[in-house]
Image (cartoon, rainbow, N blue to C red; front, side):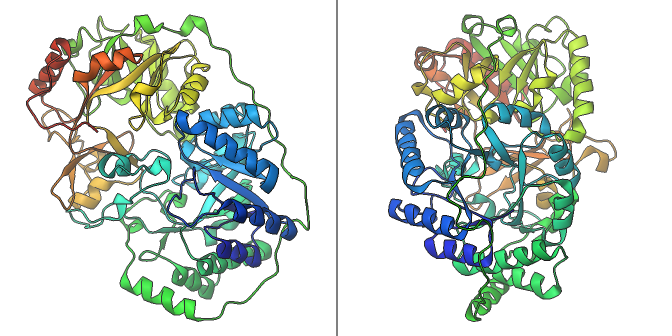
Length: 600
């Protein structure tokens, strides 16, 4: 199944003409390409008619986070789409929105957006229970992990085979939102990853485009259902040329010719292409920018006439070919839940480097200790307050080791876990679980849905309106102090900036995050001189944090009145003295610490 983008009526016609089996597009609101031309209601009706006549499936993107105040408008939009456009499926990021759509429109077919951060197959069954029938896998997955996910998934899978890459893990980027007030999770990304920064590579976050034209046979053999081309911001000419090449390769079951690869590169590229994620060989070679030479080749290609091919897919079909999956929600399990009254105060979160002595946090309600730091941490007498902070990303191949480490934590007397991804839930029987901010709790709808999974507390999205949630049967948690994690990368950004890798295996066992080393592994410095710490995450991944710590401790009364009983104090590059200062600010309700902060 070949799935092509359409950001305009011309692009839709180009996709159909070039042989797409499916086309995905968005209306004027609530989609992840707010800056594309997108489609008016009259155009959506026409698009539905054209797709039915051509036998091409139509998928509608509703793949952004949705605020509670916007929900009536979204449901009204879906009502219009269901009655007048009749799309084959909706691509959804927001779990709360998915729940409401299935309750209101039980025949609607849902596909899980790549923004839902799907890296491990343990979450596939959960997505199925929520009513999803297809999942768009994270773009950073290598072929071995794709095979594993498909093999273990009860729902269909979709993979991006061509187009732009985000350097951040799929669905986890807060950089544009925090530093530019334009949320990537809301379809308004300002693309800070394409900007220059100081360092060995002046564009350390700008990745080449993905091209898996030579890998289609492997994906087909793996059982992938749909092959997706990125590009709703691209021209109709781009859509036609790229779709045409992939259509021929799939139909003829062959590798691309040099001429076809050249045409793909001329259509659009950034210093060429990469398949580094697919092969699992992440390296500086995956990075590139849109050069003047790339632009010249694209201009020359557009001057050539493009041929026409006949439309592919269903013929004059007026019926949906994909049935909606039933939604089966879990029941809240009382014996593993702590009440909101038991969860007041602060959560200490020292995630920048190991802290052997946790006595600084003797009055914390909870202490989130990254699982990888646990062997270096003295937890004696504090086991009841320790919560293992699980990695933001773990592929299927990493689950046996992760399960072993969780088991060791359990033997040590730890019974709490802070969870950034639903895929971990099957591993945590008997644990009290706390939902982490990457779950993107942006609205009451999402909060209420996740509560059914027996989360004791939920860390509200740093992008959300914290005062809009109201009371909850789970404790609510918000960032009180700390540098917001802007993005986690599968690639080593430290190597791009510093010109060498600081991973311990490549530094003769010296860990850049260990005591005695520099307080941060590296700094990403932008054109204004703002400095963003870059720290190692689990594996060879990196985490980029905001240049200044967010501070909300002087708003504690306001937050508590809104139902938020927990304030997270997130420590990354702070000295012990600075940590003590922040703790004193919390305990005495001081206005702010005596060092630079931000309200974002």
